[in-house]
Image (cartoon, one colour):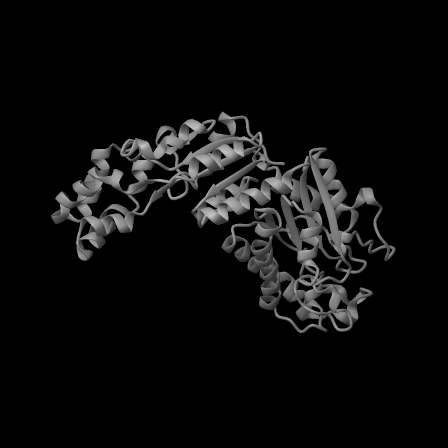
Length: 415
């Protein structure tokens, strides 16, 4: 459910083309040097943070290019010429508000830039408030500034749709549970907003889609059947999260990340993934826990191959969900609990080997890197979940309980 849309300002609701501005002021060489002095060392961010004075920040610019002090002063004084009003900003904001949603801003901005061209900021009067970095002395992607916004306006992160042009800021918002749209151009922004708000109509719970294999299905290693509903980690997670959440179990025995199994190509996790996302849209949280079946000897995959299969799913979610629902869900990349080393007595022993075990143990660090690359959260089920000695692959009842708590702590971390 979406109740609030939060916009970044610079390069989203206003134009701020620094490179073009510099080349209009100076020749090519001077433009490059002045840009490097003001932006190359990251000191411009200190203006947005407003802990140092303008004079202190300018002194840092001068230190980088001592013989260009005059040019630095000119670029700084005339920065308002770089700030461009966007005609579509007010109509877009008004259209969102007409749907009954609040519209806020969260912006890394200095007092100097804010005051440089007031006419470009006329959309502010159409919004319901927001946070300027220079007034709270924090800048994105620091999670503190997001928490200030949430607290100031009494927001639930899962009910917020955040728009920004910087991937690092998008990743920070997603880690807090906010829905996000990465801004690239106004047409795409309008299309994503329209899709998100249309699909959100009637979406009165926060959906958690759990896409996995037999351990998400709830396979019981003691009986070869299925654990009762109340004992599966997906059901337990739903109880922990409470009535505002809908936990959807999509577990298929034998499912791989993105590889065909001999005689059962339909168990390829990539083959049904988009259909699953479309079936349950809008998806707020997406838990992907796959990889155990990829370790089987019949597939002959390496740990790197398995990680590549997981990354295929993460990329696929990022590619298709903007069209399906307007935004990318928060994805939790999950490394399954490793296969036990004493697998010789397992009913699945013929499918396994010492290499299978090794591969299952090597996926966690590779999955972690995938999560970091794509701005996802990461969970290592092996840190808490307990695999049964009966078959060495499937979770015990206690393992299901511990895994549910691990996901709960990830979705609802203590602040």
